Image 1: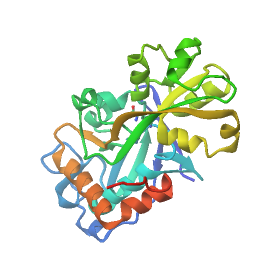
Image 2 (image 1 turned 120 degrees about the horizontal axis):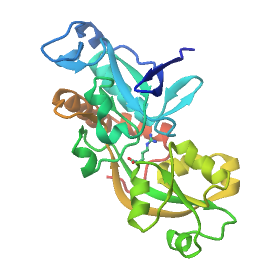
Image 3 (image 1 turned 90 degrees about the vertical axis):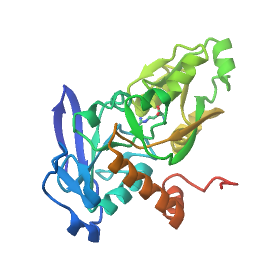
Length: 280
Ligand code: ARG
């Protein structure tokens, strides 16, 4: 099992390579750099930060979008980016980075990663620092509460002065703040769930598909219930460095092709669950 730990800017990084079948296009992969500062170029002249790789920044764990299983990072986002990598004739490599990075685009700008995929919502604020692909997933926010907490809605959490938690820097946290809460901020989504489990908080606001995934675990479902599904109308996107139109176009193409040829639906069912009813 490959497991490398290295430090960048004082942060701990885990480096994993996911399995991507090398496409026939691999032959097209040029190993030398162009006028761009990127050291590599993939099929179609798309710049990459490491020769032969498509390096994805993410923030683990975020099941079902990215999480570790049997020593590998897998999930819906990982599978989608594998499609991009395949088209580019390279192999995806996943880096676990601080969530803050997704807003600032720091690791895209510094050439650490080619793109970021982290179940990340497209927001105007983030758009100031990074460019997004076409949307690839619709999400809402969910309120997960203790089964015996006696509260089911955000209004009740407020009324009964219960403690609310969220992942720092996420849209769930900003939604809660917008509703007048000062949520306890956790560093990652598993820390959010732990905060709930250990009673640090009584309820949490997190993306609905993640809560849905958590509830598949009997221990979680026995103790907690979905209090509210809050339609925030969010859409996930893959981000690239501002102005990296070649890579953005390649990502868009992979997403659109996957939607057109049924691959998207297959991956959705594999990683997320039954396709939403009435989906167009
Ligand atoms: N969709 C939310 C956002 O963009 C949460 C994303 C959290 N992602 C993660 N890998 N922990 O803020």
